[in-house]
Length: 64
Image (cartoon, rainbow, N blue to C red; front, side, top):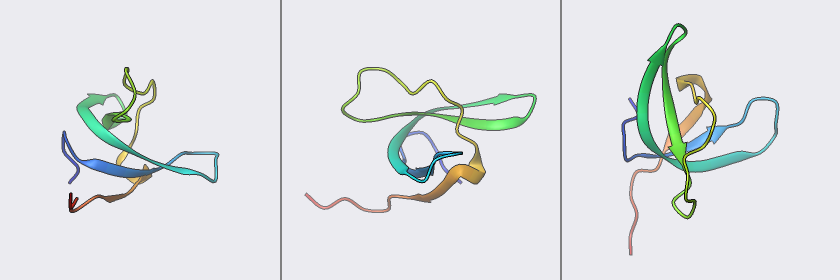
C-alpha cells in the first residue's frame, strides 16, 4: 500500500504520459482514499486526486 514519502509512478488519466511524484498526503472523500502528490523540485503539491488504480508502482531503492 502506498504511503506518505513514497515516490510513485502515476498514470495520468486521459494522457499517454506517466509521472513520478512523491506522495505527501493521504486523504479520503466520498469515492474513497486518494493521494496528494508533489514533484520534489516543485514548490506546491499537485492539484489532483490520485487514486490507487492510477499508481503503477512505487520506487523501491535509491542509491547515491
